[in-house]
Amino acid sequence: ELKVEQNPLFLSMQEGKNYTIYCNYSTTSDRLYWYRQDPGKSLESLFVLLSNGAVKQEGRLMASLDTKARLSTLHITAAVHDLSATYFCAVVVVSPHYQLIWGAGTKLIIKP
Amino acid sequence: SQTIHQWPATLVQPVGSPLSLECTVEGTSNPNLYWYRQAAGRGLQLLFYSVGIGQISSEVPQNLSASRPQDRQFILSSKKLLLSDSGFYLCAWSGRNQRPQHFGDGTRLSIL
Image 1 (cartoon, rainbow over the protein chains, first blue to last red):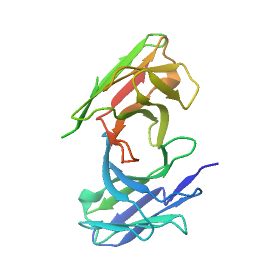
Image 2 (cartoon, rainbow over the protein chains, first blue to last red; image 1 turned 45 degrees about the horizontal axis):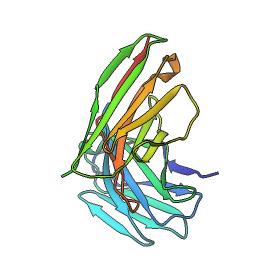
Image 3 (cartoon, rainbow over the protein chains, first blue to last red; image 1 turned 120 degrees about the vertical axis):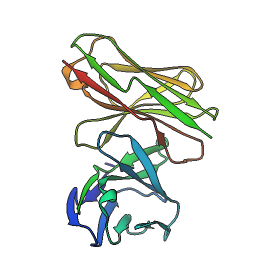
């Protein structure tokens, strides 16, 4: 069974702290996406990771992909309140057809 | 640039009533189209996807159906809504070659 597991599912942290969200998946894939969802809103694409060892950074967020370990991380540096949201990872699989397998999401609350 | 429109934004319907949600994409041709449902506080569940006009694949058996009458139009329907159909419905599109999915603003459906 194809599984994508995110942890933690809920994270409350103080501004200025660092933390990492983990995304483990059970199938072979060399592509992974990270999305952000604000409460009551749609999903916004954050990062596209296309190969083993890929690292992308945008502001205080940095995402990486290790296809051998089937693991992606989303690292938050010096968190600020505006980063409060739910973060989803999604793994690309192509068999039996192209689809995304989604993690359950990590709800991140950053307290001022 | 490509845009995706989804409407209505909010819908309140009685049990047993019909449903029609519409999604259109602009600025691209022959997109892959997707309908997802998100229960409150949960991840995304893929309901339908389409790779072309009239080509619909269903991921989850239920009382919902989807149609693609035109290249950039995707419609989610039901003849009789159930209480369990409540949720946040998201339409998404992607280009070919396994590109990331881009989401509409979503429809929040409440069944009374």
